[in-house]
Length: 137
Image (cartoon, rainbow, N blue to C red):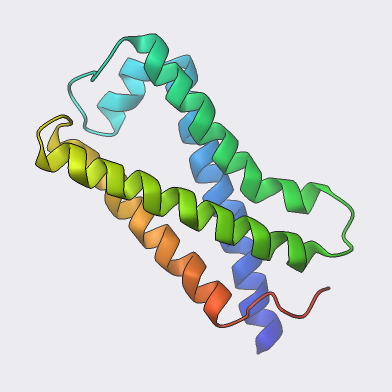
């Protein structure tokens, strides 16, 4: 049963990385279209800044995938570090979005990003708390 949970943890990391990685690439290549898909009608700034944010989001997504591209030794250690770091990033981004929406600096459509980041951070913190990756493979 523990192995099944660990495999689900691996799957989560791959899917979270693919989610952020693809969103980042889309923001980089087609920021207006991507924001429309996200149901965020108004571009909050010049497209170049959304592309810059896209590079950041893509980089976060890639950080989920990098542990799997390295030598298999110490995979679980790398995953624990990545989960802690990206959970911190997600909490920071969610906090920024919350303040920005409350102060009307961002439109309410950005709340979907906030909920995604809070959900992913909660999952990751749970994974760390339950020591899902504490036995290195």
